[in-house]
Image 1 (cartoon, one colour):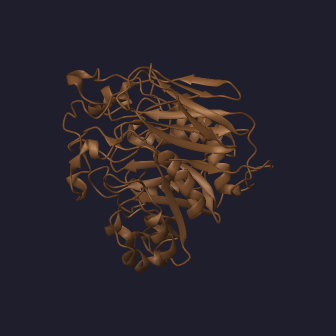
Image 2 (spheres, rainbow, N blue to C red):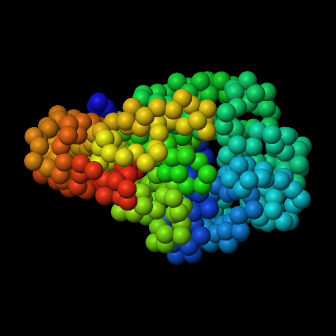
Image 3 (cartoon, helix red, strand yellow):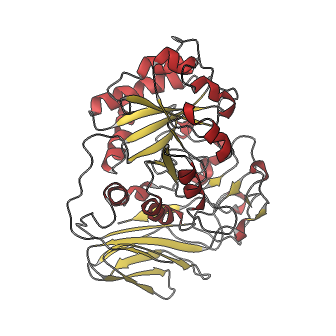
Length: 437
């Protein structure tokens, strides 16, 4: 598989105001218990360097971690200046109880209380001078957001772009007077297939002029934290696929899922300094599996999305790669492809995840790009100026992968691939190791 985008020399500038064509990263607030203002500042700095405009603070009702961590996040964002923002996504499932609309004035106990406290912060993300607000689920509470309803009557108008996962387009269209946009959660393929734009275009074209927020995610491995059985959806080429698809779909907003969801293995932020921020059932799968290099190409992907294909100047070659460090042939330890909890037909994990190496090269000019696994044969690809992506099968090879851009001499080594996993019980780690140069 290969994607090639021609990149011409041009000046790529970000818009002066952060409104439409903005990129957000989803933060699971329940995974920030060990954060202080210093750690929030570090996360914000890394996100800004990657070209991200705002963090989406996803919050489950009743989480005692929320009030102090929201305060820390806003303190850090306000100190960082006007070019990085925050906004809330009220998780109507995460706390085991839906968010109540009011009464106002009770921070952490109601939507109104939280919005009243933070909507005027200079760090709060706004569109059309309205506080941007999202959700995870909450379709049964849609009336709270109606014009003249409980929330807008108390806190003023908002720019409301909910996710009501599992809700059909017809029901969302019927609620169009209560929303300013919509965010469908479908950003992973089902079963042994690659992701397409069919679902994105279905929603975008059916929203009758409302704003569309598109989800982009690099991976999915729910490692069994909580009561759910572990499962995978196909990651493989997904990170490259989805950014290519933003150019096709051209959404108003893009939300990266996620910055720090270690339990589902799609984090692009740094590994936490405290294991207390990783769900217990996920710790062995996350340790020593950094994903930082997935941010490596974000300034280019985001610039292309915002400014148009072929508008970004490439100053130096870059490599990015990801893969699992042992093949599907090991002990899955109960991990399935798909999950009955989402109403899906369950299949073997090996029918979903390919045993392969997935790598991208951002090139100043045409060059051969190669990968060699251990003492296996070197595989050489013809790279073109711009962004390139390939995948190659493991083919039974083990050892340390070495990547190279021939013309510039850029090289990088990955983590060793072994025939069996070194995790307890020989469990296959379906998390991705991510590297680059």
